[in-house]
Length: 396
View (cartoon, rainbow, N blue to C red):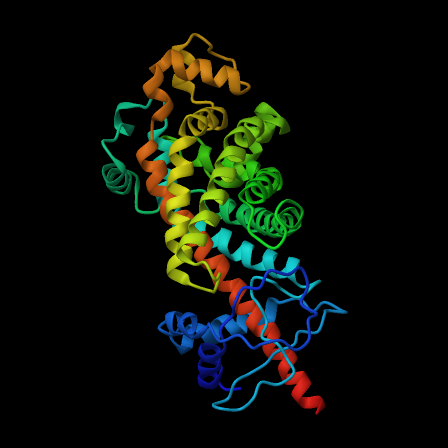
């Protein structure tokens, strides 16, 4: 099928959410509610679709014994065939995990790469005892001064290690979330969405995500600090390993979990709730995914800022902060120790240092993550369906 026919067919077909665990139903009515979804993404243009299809065709795993999808098409006034339209929210059994992992990995890498300069600013603004040259009025002032005084590449220092960590971390994160959400929803509230299931699935997914991402976070934040002594990512890894031991890469893990478990529970519950309001039929709808992701990220980020400040302190082991509380030569260890240090240095307001940068970072970050994830999940599912349809047509 040529590109134009592919896009037009996608507009005509669409994907409509049907709550089911498998895709082995035969017959049934054909989906007709997807025209608006196809129209929304048609503006991306033929070239982007060509690249996407090429990428998906290369990376989509071929899984033996996949359940056959049944699809029905409308062509003008023709009757539907004996096949049922695939549902991108209910992927074929056996292929769904790999699809979620691929879509999640792409979403995670794009999210972190696109928002990395703001993440650098957030780390700087959470410093408890910044040097005079690293005291900023707001996010834009910080970004402008970093570029002007330290060079245009300074805000993306450490980007490579973040991308390496974000891929596998988000692959595990989304695959675990989608699988558990379906299982728990069927147990708690069969046939319908369950906010409790969404929150619980998000919490468990966070355990895997943070285990994969925490070492990259430590290196990234040390590279982002003002006057960072490390020449490169490998130099940072070597110095931390030699001077503080391997456990230094997981010193903030418990704090990370303490922050991210409530963050992700609130994030997923808010996102799924907003999807019920903005996209009740659960079609592929880029605008609803973007708005829901942005609002969910902002709310969760603001609520968990105090824990993020403590995590940053544990990751960076800020020397001026340690010296100012007469702990020279020692390391800040544990969440309780970090909380006490933050309070001694700045009182209650210190727990919300960098809250503006954190919210500004998380809103587009989660919007990008959900939009890219849902988009690639949609494209991969469509690609798998098209391959099966072509094979089936060839057998006739």
